[in-house]
Image 1: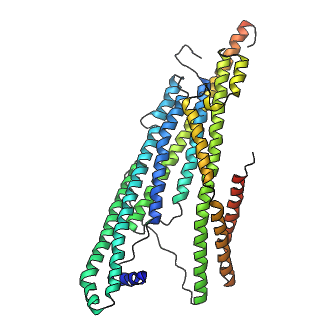
Image 2: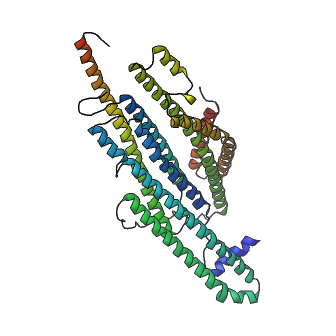
Image 3: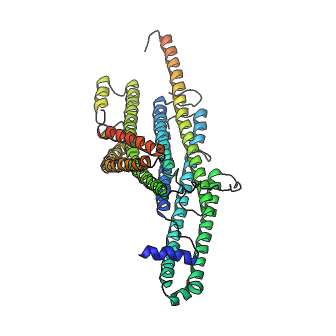
Length: 337
Length: 106
């Protein structure tokens, strides 16, 4: 078994197994979309601000400074977006580095494991394989420290202040006291595995559900905004005598998608909103399966835990979470309107 | 409405602007919480302390910054709404005065 060779090999080489990089890869994605989201604020904010563009005067000037000035909120948002995408780039570099150097370490460990099978091979481990592995491990530490320093710099720029002394990282993992009874230890492991699997299934389901809920709410808001803008504009046009009462009533009934009293970008956004709603709905498909998985995993964990007199409170909380998500999914599939 | 001191009021524009800013604020608030939820609670993507410490610090600063931007957006929406309301009141008062002078209601 290949992993058996590697496991033994890491011991022979005196280096730890390199970390799993999937979490890092996930966070690269999160930072990238965060940067994109914040970059959109500048454009959207400028457009929202322009709606009040006919106003002039001292108070208007003061507000303009607050919004579009040097230290204004839109410029700030652009800077944030930039620092988020720089952070995403650095995380991507770290991901590539650890994947690459880690892959080499896994290869070296496999080789060491194989070499240990023969006396000739064993003679090669210390002079040949060990120094390379140790150097690679050192390099991994140096590279990630270097990227860490970049993050310190980015954090300074985000805060707009010089660096504060790095806080001592307390990652004193609270290790549970060793259980002497192997059956109980095995049960605890099974419970932990079930719990971790359930958490993962819940996280997947939850993020889809939250996206769908937020998307629906946003679509309603955009529609409301367009209707309100239209009403205000028709009221104004009628007040100024530009349109008659019957024209106003007729215009109020017209479809929003090609309404002459709405800006092009508002109409465009309504269209985009409809498309993204369809996309979100099509992603709701696998959610029910994730929730079924989560429910089963919680029950498995509860069964093992109860049979061995272990604590069940965390699993029970996960169970509540699953039923809450099931309720929300039902709401999304059967909207009240 | 134009006044003598080169001040222009456009109440309708302000109301629309205020509403758009409120939507933008809520939208960003939602996105912000979503993103924070996606990285919060994770033990950190890499176990190396020289990376993990600064990276967490960066995330804290990043989310602190977006919270401030969101507060700024919210403040702008409130400012537009407040100015729209004040202008509308003043406009109504002026209209009433003019109508009173002419002896009929609008």
